[in-house]
Image 1 (cartoon, rainbow, N blue to C red):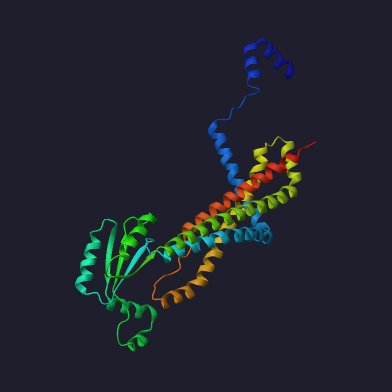
Image 2 (tube, rainbow, N blue to C red):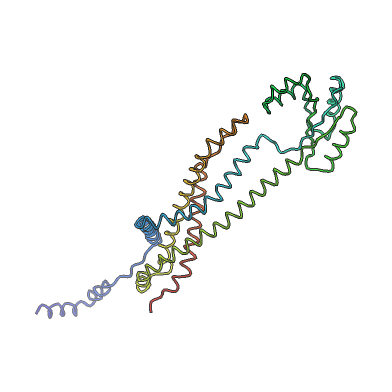
Length: 338
């Protein structure tokens, strides 16, 4: 009876019936803000889940991160050693110096005239006069042989003029200047201290190139370690990947958790590398300071600070991301529902 009455009302009011049918299904459209919020929310969820999975197997995770840390700590330690070496020789300006040893019979007036004449030379930037007494005092302080020198009676060291050439890069002009200095009447001998500067520059360049090559080689090792680790993760979650793809999950959706896992391995590996580096510096600081103080130097070993921590963590995270991306691109395409 009620059904018949309702049918009669619908027949008598076709407009109301049309409105009722039109409200039966509504097409929902998702805005850009909603999609962005969902995308960011999924990233947060996947990142947190990756961290939980990392600590869920602490032994395996720490071992992998430690392998990454050792690979990163080796070139980082070499680079830090080069920086400390450059700090140690910072007092040397790297410019060649010409030492003009004068005859012991040269008078003070003649030496002063020669020094003034050299200062007016356009090829010479600076002239420093070192008297025999100053040279002897400096030698006693540097060598610690003061008691032996006292027994000599007379001062065996001559007066010296230390010259800084203006154009230190032109070897031909330097050699011409040395020849002109040797021709001076008051000159006993001339020494061009250029070899040690060249050796120091070559040694520094060699260390930098070796450090860069070692860093590239070990960075490749880090990427391979992450690739192998993520490959094992993919195999262990094969069924989960199949289910996600069956319900329409995209490749980006499948790839995202493994990328965050690679970042986690790299991030913790970079932190452990910084810990290893800081521990090594702490162990060596005492002996190095004692050695430098024995030579009358106040040199202190520079320790890796927050900048080193940031560089290692960021670099290791990028390497972990790269390794995870390569592993996912290679292995997830092989897992397809049939």
